[in-house]
Image 1 (cartoon, rainbow over the protein chains, first blue to last red):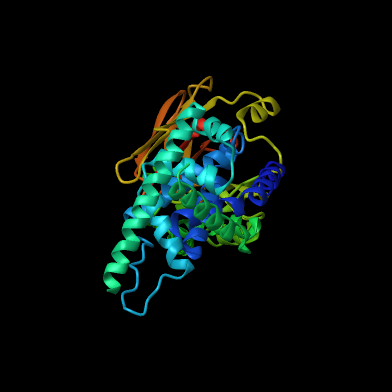
Image 2: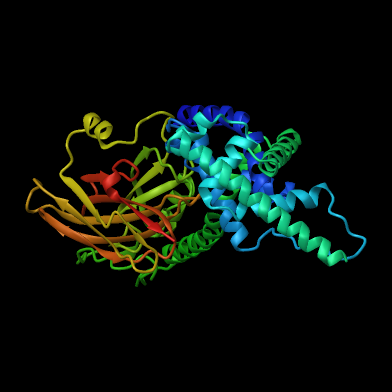
Length: 169
Length: 282
């Protein structure tokens, strides 16, 4: 009994060490805030640990944990848990953190498959082939999601900066 | 890739790398302890309720043991009906569960009873050295100076020992006592736990008491959540008065049958048979 528990803990610890920075970085892409990114990644890892007997035996436990992370990020955002309103005022120019918040909001607004493709390929640097394997679609589909996702994100970034310069005038 | 697409791609990568390289001091050990703490929040509150209930049971049992005949029922462990002892003065068996063996013996002596056979066996929930169960059960009316058999915990079962019925049935002869419990699972509030004990192959003249305990597995102190008893008279199936759990968790059934003299006992131990558990979800 004790022995089995220790083995589970050991294999989880290895998984934790390999995946935590990656998970928190993905969460950051979807929140734009470090604190909520860590909260999200922690929650996803906790869920993996609480089901580790099963999840640990999966071919790709990280893929499972990433999906939990997306779902948490999207449902948290729906509850407006961490979406900050940009600060108003003429003296305000968006700093780097503000730019991250805006980009995160743009990514969350995308259809889920485009968001996931962008997070995995543009963010985590996974190859199109690996993304296609994880998402179980042909590579061509991933490429088209990436292209459409980037275009849509660029449009919403332009819209948000136009809004801001309009406020500043 | 258009210029604006390329820009988005680079921004995403820059943002990702920023976070990937930012130190996050959380360790796996801390994470696992967070999980433990979260899981324990509710059971801890429940444990307080159980401890309070256990204290009431012990105090009432103790008072009952001190009160001379005519006995009065404890009111805690109900539905006990042993056969009337016609000639001798009768006393009520006190509740000894949770007491040390020595204290239990003292309480019995005070109530005019004696300690019968003491059986030591592992218990996941009762600390080593404490009384897990008695036969006859608390609340039963027995003749003065009767022996009360006690089961004493030796602590948790040895690590690695598989908790299956196979191991118990290979080491002891097949028991004439079988138990059943339904349902396997259910939601809190609308689930009634039914159980029964079946005795087969015993002498038709053998009669005595069947004791039912339902232990709540998640309780750290492991006081039985419910205890009751019924009489048996020869082979047959004897139902347990149904039990409505008020706390979510895993419940384990334990059944002990003993004849009126206490010289013949059979037991279905808890934690050995998955069919004798009910998971109540909150």
